[in-house]
Length: 117
Image 1 (cartoon, rainbow, N blue to C red):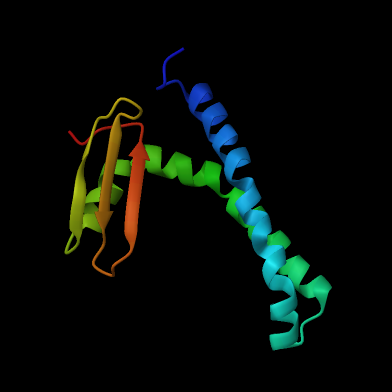
Image 2: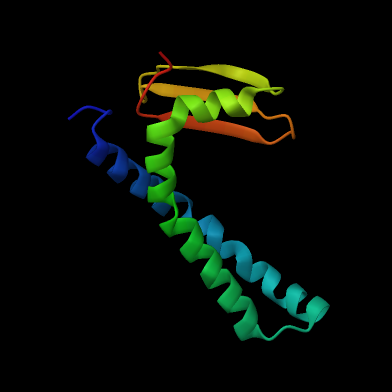
């Protein structure tokens, strides 16, 4: 099994999500300050956080599919009037990888299953 295998990448991504999932639950530190500052009920705050986790988690396969199909085009579009920190190129873990800061100052890191031709 190579690192380009989609099943390997899926399993590695799941392991990475499990490793960083604890950071998502640090939100409990902010619940009481949010309740006192806004007057929201605890159930409202929990509902908002639940929606955040659901959207964050279940959008990732679609995002991965789009980046795999359009990775090079997305990179070159974002790079216009931006700063390329690492050109989109093959690496040992991906056929295409690049880092940039777009014209609005947002940093981007893109992994894709294809290269720029």
